[in-house]
Image (tube, rainbow, N blue to C red; front, side, top):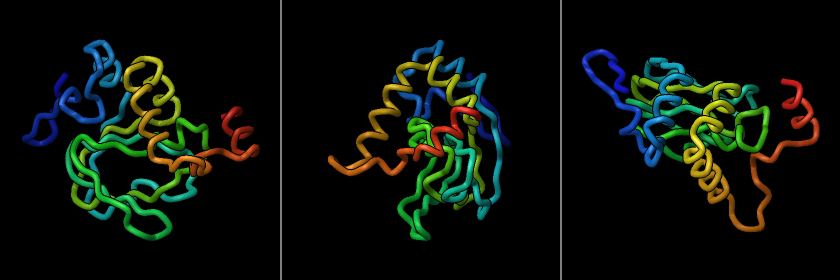
Length: 155
């Protein structure tokens, strides 16, 4: 369950995003994700872009922006993009830009659905994280509109 990129070897099992997953779940994760390499400055996703994706940073760093403002930088083992997918949204909620050359594991919507089915412990953790990111009583930022839910159902 190791991936080689250049002279580096990566293990999905060592990623924080997948801590607590069983060996069966880790094999499914390996099988479902698509590896990509990006240069620094590459825009990985844009706010309100359709077709959000779940992205795990295997190496490098990614800046996360909302409304044009930097809200954080994530690195090796971190992930983003799960909140809109879990909420059934058809649009992305952040802009993500590679801050350094990065090696990523990317899951399209259909791969993410399969991932949640194949890795229930990951699904539970991602749902908790998405819920914890929203202040009590506030509407969830990734709650889809009726039109979005309808579009998602036909996608």
